[in-house]
Amino acid sequence: MRTNPLPVDAALSTRFRQVRGLSVDLAAPLSDADATIQSMDDASPAKWHLAHVTWFFETFVLRDHVPGYRLHDERWPFLFNSYYEAEGVRHARPSRGMLSRPSLDEVLAYRRAVDAALLDALPGLSPEGQALVQLGCHHEEQHQELLLTDILHHFSVNPLQPAVWPGDPKVPVAMPGPIGWIEGVVGDVEIGRSIVQNSQDFSYDCEGPRHRTVSHPHAIADRTVTNGEWAAFIADGGYRTPTHWLSDGWAWVQAQGIEAPLYWQRDGNGEGWTRFGLDGRRPIDPAAPVTHISFFEADAYASWAGARLPTEFEWEAAAAAHDPAGGNQLDSAGAVEPRPSTGGPAFFGDVWEWTGSSYRPYPGFRAAEGAVGEYNGKFMSGQFVLRGGSCATPRGHARASYRNFFYPHQRWQFTGLRLAKDL
Image (tube, rainbow, N blue to C red; front, top):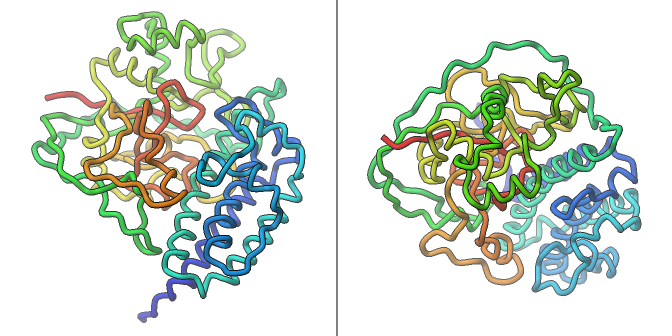
């Protein structure tokens, strides 16, 4: 039996409710103190994430597209603007953890008020306004992942190392076999998306314009590198051998005393490794993808393994035939972590995969007009591209053309690697 599709505003209303509800569910286990702390400059308090994404909807949709709308609190834009220079001065990022007020309850009340106003206004919004709601939903999904990874870091520095959620019982699984190699496309390859900002087909501006690039003979691994394989790299002196490392990476290792992925510690006998996750501290799963590694570490491992990192174009061409909604991704609140492969090539979920490509604009890229034009383009300096999504990426958020990006030393996200080699 065929059914008529929902009107655009009805479908967008449903999506808006789902996205907003998941954020609240993710924060539900947190106390006001949990939601206020900030463990490092790169991370933000959970309370700030919840308020910032609300500020985004209030500012760019309600304020700018709903005549007569009055701000919930005129003091709060200063607190919850992130980096939008066009929106004026703002509270310093490293000091977000000092915001004991507003309380978590007040932030949740702010969310409810903005949600009610937006849902009431949605049927009358212009196409431009509805496109901004869709952008805001994707923006909030990005912050859902950041909320989880920031909570993980906050809790990791607590000497009690508490779990946010109880973990599932561990079931031993067989180690994956040796890496298989998928021969890549050679010659002209079309990369990127034709940007269409609507409810049915969304992509960020940095994913386009679609363009041609030349791909040389290469192969890409059919899976990501595992914890067990990474432990072998450590045991073989991987962190003590400068010839594996880029100069900046080796300086970082030496200066920071890096000897393992973030959150790894030696077990009580000094013979194995444990890791800290949202379910507390547990032994590493040798069959699961390694995660919380920097670009520097990923590049060093590839050098040790006699391989290299794929370019973002090689990765996209290989992933294009795979379902971006597949794999281990975020579906609901609860403990999340990379899981062992269940067989077959998988390009989405578990860990974001470092590529060897710098985050720069595609030919013909133009940032959007106004403050929302600051969303991606201004960060195209000094960062590297990651692909594929992670166990903390909301399902349906990623796609083959999606370009995540971080600085090469950063590793508090669920970041891993897939190898490539020249043929």
